[in-house]
Structure formats: C-alpha cells, structure tokens
Image 1 (spheres, rainbow, N blue to C red):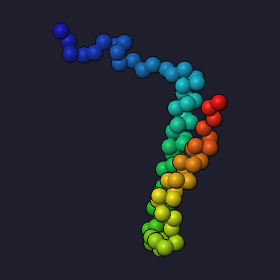
Image 2: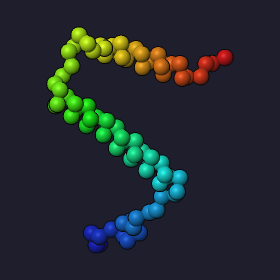
Image 3: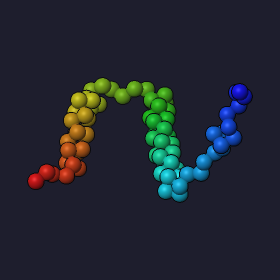
Length: 77
C-alpha cells in the first residue's frame, strides 16, 4: 500500500465566513497583546526596572482583577 495520504486528506478546507472572521479577530488581539508586551520590554531596556517601592504588589493587582471579574458576573436570583 502506498505511503501517500489520499488527496482528499491533504486538501485545504475553507472556513465559514464567521469562523474566518473569528480567526482574524483572534490574530488581531494576539498581535496587539504582543505589541503591548514588546513596548513594555523596550521601556525596561531603555529605562531599567521601576523602583519596587513605587510598584503595586501583584497580590493587590490579582485581587482587583478578581473583583472586576466578579462584578461582571451576572447575579443569581
């Protein structure tokens, strides 16, 4: 038997328009996140690390984010 896959197995399938739009949106968000991360790294390279005394501890950041998520959750009656 041949080791080549059947032609139908290797043919590309077109996405539905809604799925293609979702993939494009995900790509745009991922690109924006990467750009924002790169900007932070460039700032650190140019200016060094910030003074730890001037920073917000990660625990406070986490609690604030969790509170924000909880406020967005619909209340159960």
